Image (cartoon, rainbow over the protein chains, first blue to last red):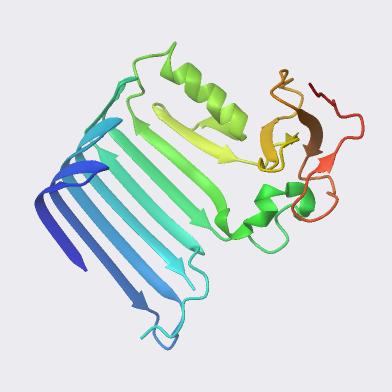
Length: 64
Length: 177
């Protein structure tokens, strides 16, 4: 799943140049374990409490 | 094809978060690089949990072992403010700050001995309230309408009495007005 937005505004945060990719896949020959990967980037994230610029995030987890 | 997802809590995981600049009303930080790792503890490596853990036992799956949260980059330029507040917050939550390299702070979490305070109100419409504090660090005083204040203790190495309820000290303070 890929989500891209030049400008996104929610009640919690405003984001510019958002790119979010989530990939989830099962293991070969195993139906329940899932390995997921999330890649996130944004030029600016502004919330009520803080703002961040040039944000890059990466997460990878394994669940069952 | 996934047939079932029986436990959404990760067995293992890794995450990175990088920012060029983070600005808050308390201070500015930048650049920031946060790294976190989650692993499933080896069998037998953890302290056996029982009802004495109370809130932790109620939701054990929410607490996978937190191996490491590392911060790389410049620290906030408010040594008397944010750093002071962060140090006390970490201590209150049971985190132990570890200096690994220059400009890097690691956090290690261990279950901390805490005290549970129960406040029971005389009005049946008000449900009992639990307050969690570090052991022997807090002595709440006060009164409001009519209520009882009881102190219990909770420690990972102690056995609790009854699932989900903390052990209540018999010498608990009893306040009523």
